[in-house]
Image 1 (cartoon, helix red, strand yellow):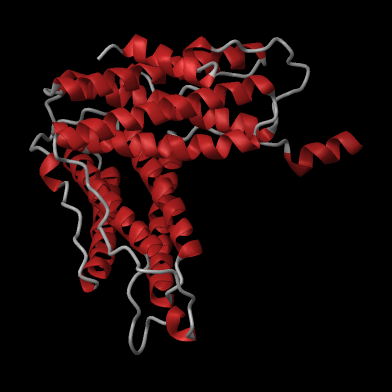
Image 2: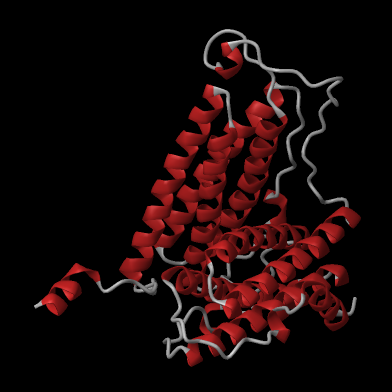
Length: 358
């Protein structure tokens, strides 16, 4: 698969993309807080992805999976380069992010090719969601152009990953349900019930969120297992073990909702973790990586709550969301205590404003 040719085809389709951006010279308007936030988040995400993908490339055996990883590394480097250029023009300090010290490409193999593909699928989904949020928050033409290209490259990465997953028989499809014979309207208030009495069958949108949460829970559990067995410090190891327990609990709760309705459960990814106890990544990167997974799943639970109509489902997602939020806070505290959390761009605060007024 020719990465450059495919990337150029994507460029032609979308206008201008990440590595062929024609960023405009009109920078009379300063970057807004939203633009700063999304550029900063994309820089950090791309630096983390660079480290992870470099390690995967050293261990992968399947050549089609390798092609996906090479494309992922290509776009991650282009994002870092483009944002660095924007920061330079704006006299914005460059975040440190993640460096060569955060990855050990010569560490023994920790994850299977099947896990790597599933991980890349999740990362592509995450960036599609992130860019779809960033673009409507962006005013400046050059930054809109950048995020438009990012959306195209993230979509291309997802499509490549999904194609290989399908070819290998590894793509986890959501359950199929009967096609309704006709449309109808809800006639009874117990459509919202769920705790007592007869429960109505799950709707298609409820199934989709339950299935997605179960699938991601398996992936989170596998990643946390790998990180738990390679972490050296006790606080980080304990954090990973607690996270694995939370992921297991979410899988148990959500998968039971599927089986109660006679629907199949996605396969587990635990087999994708090998026996190595040598860490391929720094503990800083591992804790940050789990924070990314937690943040995405927290957001997904919120989406599920907003579209779920059965009260018992809402309660389940709310409970899982609260537990995940606590684990996320623990991770942030761990990063702060270790001096691993970079400050995001922020306002000057009220004290600075008071000084100006006087």
